[in-house]
Length: 469
Image (cartoon, rainbow, N blue to C red; front, side, top):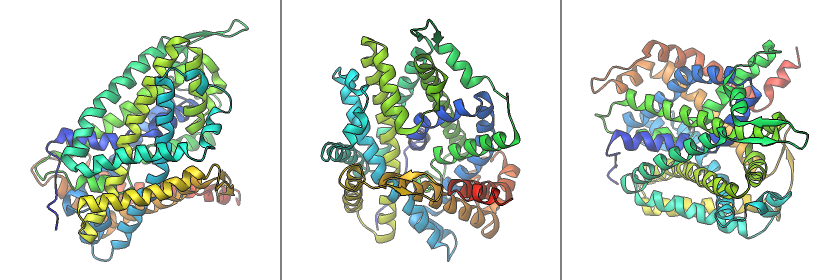
């Protein structure tokens, strides 16, 4: 049996957990939703969900990890006999996500070096991104480099690997986000027709609530978007927070750490919006804000950097360095959730578990990369969207398994072992847990109901049911 490590200090845990939460979703999805859903209106609803819904799920998973001192694969069975299958579902999520996340990490490496070497104008050309991902070897090689860096950090362990990396990368990431956000606000661009737009005008779109033409249907969509963004952003229902929670010392101040994670994640998400929305609005106008995901990061933003002139290469390089750090910290947390499971379940050494997961991830990640050329095909998902291999894996993990795991966790804690078990774990070293009544109501009633609605919406069943009435 391997002796279980623990984080040396609360700052290491907070930065590691925040690093997991601060990923691609904060950068390429939060700004799009904020612009689409009424700016300040979306932010207010997001904050309400953060201190209630997000707080509940985050507290639950971290407490389960510390209480059982087990990975997600084995924690639920130890918590309550017969609930082992929930651990399997929770562990499947990072197993499925990690390969395509590494593929995207390879894309980020490509763009970082393109801008680093002063070839940003090439990345802004039409068809550049599709041309790159359609290649058979380069994306696979870059995916492997990203995966190797991730696996090396995991191999180094909790203290020398995860904690040390987080203490270095997270402060740098925050400085880069703040610096680029400030620069974004100073931007100004004049179109050929004489129309001038500024970064500060773009900032208003994000922070000033827009309730014009607000209907009940639109408001409900904002609620779903804010809840979904928070759910995926905080890295809950992926087994990650259970794994990280198992490394939290018993004498740590858990409520304070959870509050810090919430604040850090929300701050970076807001800064990402401040960084991207003003820049996109300045150079592309309101219509440019309709893009999200890879289209925003790898197509729209390089075109904006190209319009900045010489400084564009510098800003582009710093931006993709920041994205690379965010992607790496998230990939590390995904891999640790899986590796810790192998170690606890099969009593493997960290070296053997890391190697096994690394080989599996490389094989599936290579298939994902080749899904844009050798294995190319399209498939219509139940929610109606056209998908390739990466999209299918994303749909299975994010839209199906994650809500199911979260709902099952709410049932387990809210109705089987009771909320008191989690509250006692949080308070066992004499620290008082705030929002106890809120936590109890949320975990028993509100959170599972919200998650069920999110699940129906994610898999496309909500619209199907709505059309029946």
